[in-house]
Image 1 (tube, rainbow, N blue to C red):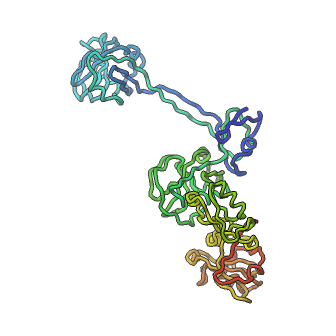
Image 2: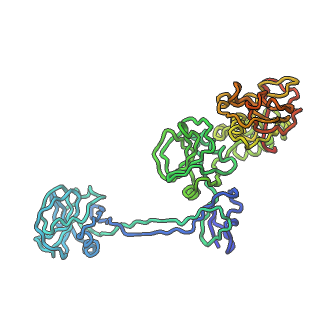
Image 3: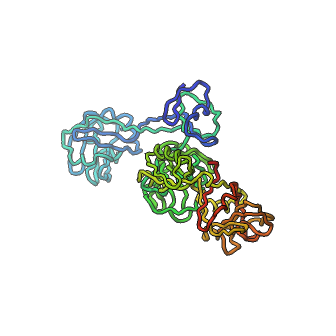
Length: 505
């Protein structure tokens, strides 16, 4: 049987499941998949009718009066071929045709563009369809008998002349479609003929908002995004609000628009819109969803879905110089090697680092160091706030290799300290005091002490002082140095840069 997966038709065996459909497609295990089961189209007749005349086409919208219903059900077939019998300042009269209308000589007010029925000579055998060309009061033999109004082609009333014909009258039709869509994580769901499956949310990023686009790329660097906030009009991801976003390109937020809040409460929050919203100077347009909108429409708070972006992120940090060359070349970017330029050297810095800037420049510098000069660390999840601070300050929040800059070191000192961020450090609340720190423990000075935000690595065991030299109450432990401490300390100098990673490079 045939199904469509991410816009491509595939033939699968009868009885196949979603697991077969997602195989080989952009999909991260455990994320949402949308399955379009069917589409129902409904075509119905509206209360709008096209009146095609010798002068052009007008549209009449019927009201709900009894005369309008009579005209729609029994008189419309008598209309074809009627002509304009007379045209005055007030009305244009088309006819005649027989009806069963009763005579009513009362006067009524008619507004410009009203359509109504009249009886010529107060005889229902000579009934006319009248169109008011101006506001006026009149007695036309059938009471008010207003059946609708001209809504389109009103200018033709100035052109109608006696003898012009109504060549045809036909109802306008409307077509609506509704989709039966299921969003699920259950890959054991059975497929049926004609199902359309989307395994990911695909986003075209805007080059007019490079920093907002980079923020999206960073948050989706593992291939997924989480729905942390869900409303009727948007789905949002608030996974990183500790960022500075400049004002970039703004615009109308149509359904599928991806924005990043650039100021105020929630700066850094990514919004993906379900419905149209007006332009806001607080929202940069970072891109647009080109497929997978059903996933966005039905995602619940806490759900995670796979995301692909165009362009993909162009960051070679953490790769070898040779792997970085091939990677950048695949993105159309020329590599210029600096530092250790050997093929096996690890890229620890890239300039420019931002994807849109790299693509625009067409080339980047990749700074390499020997593999042994990138030191492995392991961070704890026991203190998320302190770990978040550490990753932000070192750059590990957005790239595989981070940087520590030596603040103080001295031979024989039981610790080495690195610069932190004093402003961010004000928010480092004290945690449970340590009972003992070991050689290799990484810690921060918390807000209880003057040098809050300082980062340190302990070089020997201690029950009294932490990695930054503070007592237990002033220290937050964030992880351990897993590399070769002796190599790190060999010849280490003030202001020297140390490269660290949480990954196996």
